[in-house]
Image (cartoon, rainbow, N blue to C red):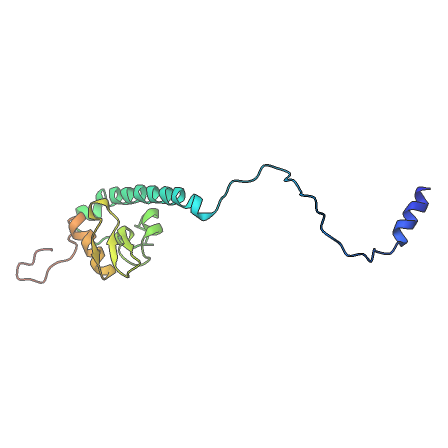
Length: 153
């Protein structure tokens, strides 16, 4: 008997009827998932990203402050060099001064300072933003002035 049933189903033709959706409402198999749209999670994610960046900026600041090249007024390391730090490499521009890790690029094309004490600082070039870091935050003077004085600026 089972053999006859299998034979019947194996050789049966597919139905020529069109498939119609059932009018019954299907119930979910599990509880509905919470809305995970970007609007719902974005502020929480943005807050976490901002806190992480603030902590990283503070760690970069500590690294610079304790560095021997700052104390000796020697040239600062470049991003990606062996003397650089991993955090500087993460935030800075490869091949530029390690201070570029403390510079933020703004939507309007200007460059700002990532450090809290300079929230409204804005200049038009990366070079000027790095100079701001070097002189205003660290009193770092690695270049000899060509003035009459001959002192480092």
